[in-house]
Amino acid sequence: MAKTEQLLLGNQVCFPIYATSRKVTKLYQPHLEKLGLTYPQYLVMLVLWEKDKITIGRICNKLMLQTNTLTPILNKMVTKKLIRKVKSKKDERVINVQLTRIGLKMQDSAENIPNNLAESTNMTREELIQVHTLMWKFLREEK
Image (cartoon, rainbow, N blue to C red; front, side, top):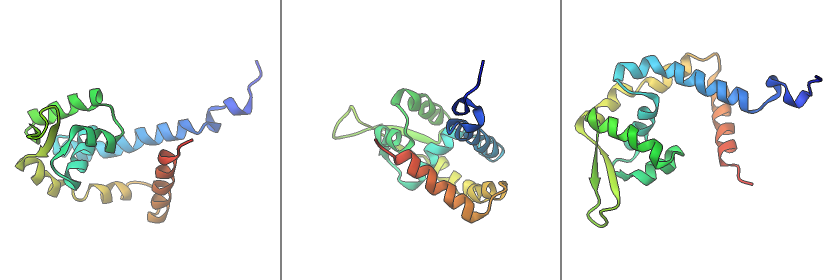
């Protein structure tokens, strides 16, 4: 069976993106274990540290997740007392998520994670900025 160039693993756009995602998550793991967070929980915390008390829908939009994916993550974070879910006074169907004191205080412990991660790569700051820019361009590309 002849192999075409376009079907070689090394020629796929998807594979290095997938492998990079796995590697980045693995690099975060030791830092997040110290905080008792999983990577998805860390992403939620980043959203809330940026803007506290927002709806579940806004968190879903920011993290590009579906509600059924985010809900179990949030429930575990409630159990850990990092966040609380509060029904909106204007519309009971809307649930706001806000940090607890524990969740807010955790921000200090997480402050150096991005720099530590950048230092653990074999890339310069300029290269990391370039990758970051290109990945956002890719994610925002609409046809």
